[in-house]
Length: 640
Picture (cartoon, rainbow, N blue to C red):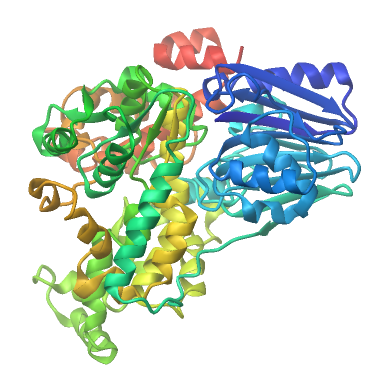
């Protein structure tokens, strides 16, 4: 596991390139504290920071082929690398290391760009072909590892994190469209970032630089078409085998290994499978809160007892003033999912004992586990003509009548329904949200379009499959996997997700949707398998999610912190939000109103802190007067 960085700039001198690449690598040292490597040639610079997991002594990067005509930097793990190594040796390729990185080099020699199709794992790599003067970069199928890039028509600058790209001195111009979308989704959707001209390479895509131009193309997709006719018994047998294999190959490590354990079905199954395969007790790590209704620790403890794991816990307390600015810096962009906080703490706890952890990420998307899937299942059981009629009739019901809002949503398609269900400001039109100046920058764009366009492309699918298809390309890649990658790599720890093994996912999603969610039962197949492994108290628990007691915090310690940051003169002078809108959010008579807006306040707080850390370059005097000391510490690193 590493962080990569690099650039192509034919006008850069060697001395300038070395200085810049060193800075780009050092600022992401947290991603790879064990080693740094750099290569220069042909106006190209490739760099990496290494977290040593496999071939500890021989895996130094950049790596190259026999005649050094191909160079590579790589972030991730290739779980089938030994099989590929054997195959490539049979074709005459000579290996100098036992690392998975070198396998990609020889696979490219043998198969060209199609080498990506043969990789099983999580990865981002940048490969320079000196003979063809060509760069190939690729991102894994689900987007577990990030790849960001800047292109101005002459320079291509790339990195695992945007902060590396910023070291090149690119303009820090705000992408107004991305900011508008952030307030809707609470993350910046791919392919945009919050910086103009800095892009994210989408999951399952390649980027090619050749002849002074760049292009991107998709190399894999999870179609969700029902091509398998296996009955439920056959499907369960096949899924059991795939789950075991997906877990087994992710135990490959030369450093200590453990698991995140929430006490939910997904992480508990992973821990159960690990316990069957490991000779020592699985090291498990869980996070709880002082507020019992948000704490999943009782369930995690039950699973730990059941599988006799070596279990450790940490209780999270409200400490936003200290921690949140650090996380905003770590995430590169505003990120409004408050579960970033427990993700950070569980990674910090685990890093004290292990270097690699397995997680349960992906179970809800692949096996249909979200509550909205069940709601949509029930809605679609009502015939379309009746549904439309009831939706239209709801307009004549008096306001406040029970069921009016639900019937009103029946008029809309799932794409619109799903966005509106999670909107922070459903009753606030954008023209009342933004200042006139900022509204002019975004008035002609529809922030719903990103989500709706993917939904429209999948209208031929079964309703359940369509929801999964959209969530995998949006929420999973841009929220869940970003959160896990940033929070874990900030603590120099590698995470692996067996439930997102692409062979497992291809099989499960090729089954009929009615098998995946039998009679509206969420995650039917996975829960059936879980019933063979887990204690009843875990099986029968209500789905909770990885949330934090944010409304409690905003009634207490976070109250004044949010008011000081969002109500500051600095925030008002940005010219983005209407003063009346911000005043409404910050009204604190009795503090209950503030708590009701807790998710909105969290989202805006992350945005304002991001401005202060990444956009403002305040003088020391301004720092002392208006900027929190922890922000000053982060800025001293960023703007050294």
